[in-house]
Image (cartoon, rainbow over all chains, first blue to last red):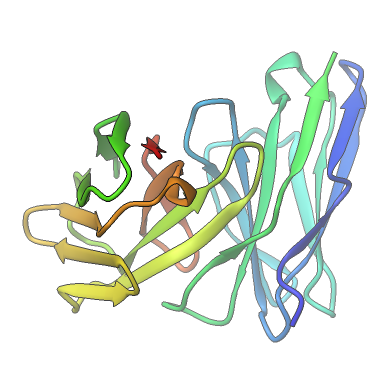
Length: 112
Length: 111
């Protein structure tokens, strides 16, 4: 049973560019969330997708957008990259409400 | 606004010791609380989930307790091993799938 899978694992982008990160949820899970984790900090909630719609959003600018596909996989897009966007981006999935949330290994983004 | 605090920020113990990690949160209106482990440069591994109606959960050498009214949770690790060395994060669930995390406790268990 594959867990939450994310790609790419590492990437380097230049300030001002755009990036797309991808996530496949754990088998059977229908809800996907994205988190940003800066070095030495706890993860911060970006947004959550359920039934292909953004259901909840954290305190992140509109440069951060996402999408969920009919197979429940998801993408996180970040436009106009800033140096401060350098972080580990984590995808999480769960089935419904109140159940254990599982995380992927993350995508390391470095903006230079 | 929900805030989660973890104490201590770092902990170093010799192998075999029993230890307690603390987590506190400011708003008791939570759905559940989850403890995670994070190895350096890696993602999060779920350890224990405690629903808001529960008082504790156990898995092997790990025991987590929850006192929702006082806004506190503890993670007890029995007979610590070097392989337990990692950062431990607690998170409270405040929305459908929104977790609010603490900054973690970095644990080092020496042989």
